[in-house]
Length: 302
Ligand code: HMG
Ligand code: MG
Image 1 (cartoon, rainbow, N blue to C red):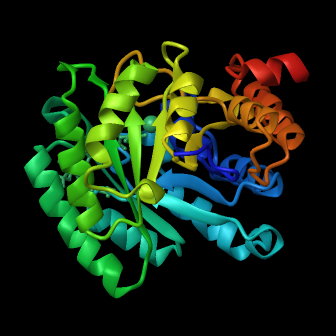
Image 2 (tube, rainbow, N blue to C red):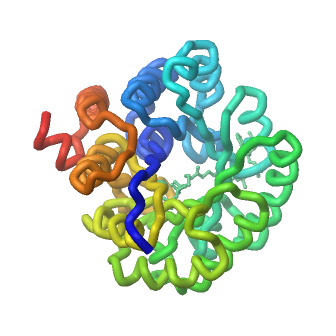
């Protein structure tokens, strides 16, 4: 496979990032963050989650965030699309009612992580997702699917690539237009990624895959590079490397969008995103949250 000439970035900072910050941002500030990101050319942005506010209080008010975005002219100005996480039918109802452009169901290859994250077994989660898929299909609502713990699990250790492939295949067959492969705790290395991708690619075409790399061990960029070599052209990232997963202790944020853009620009790969604007937004949000910027590129260039 040759390295793609164009790569699509899925900005997950306002969801994956903010869900794990100690400080809960107001809906108005979340909207400002999302609008800044959209203005920098990011066309797909995860803006929140319709999950239980008891489980993830930072994502409460995702309804107000979507309402504000939909009543502003940001979509017309930027053509950005706004996605939300929906773990069950209640979440789907919220997404529909508040006009999300896209939903995401989120499963995992590890039994214990699934239990901790969404309070059910893998089998039960896939049954729930079937119900969501049926409704989403009727409404023509695009549905993305996540597989978490693709390399390692905080509770079970190493994960068998075949377990990842099994969940990815089921989500694909359920109608997900894209499967995002999540290295939730960032323990992957290129060799482990390649082993995992060899298994998944037997069942899911490469153009349907995205990678979602947390940078806990500083391996995210090399794993993304390895995935590009496999022909994958969709990469999830979070401005300033915000966040982590509240149900994976010790997991740091996603790879910073700025760092992915710097690598892509240096390889003459088109992303359509203005790195300087993302860097400025990264600095802004870090000052607001009073936290260190996790983007090496953001720190070097600002
Ligand atoms: P549960 O307790 O089993 O649910 O939680 P339940 O159906 O028994 O309901 C319990 C209460 O939650 C009820 O309220 C429901 O109404 C409410 P009460 O009567 O007690 O007041 N509830 C909801 N409220 C709002 N929206 C909903 C909803 N559903 C039920 N959709 C549930 C099950 C899935 C809801 C819970 O476990 C949950 O919310 N989990 C969210 C976990 C989460 O958001 N994790 C982070 C995202 S995943 C991630 O970060 C990984 C990823 O980035 C990829 C990677 O890095 O690998 C995607
Ligand atoms: Mg994540």
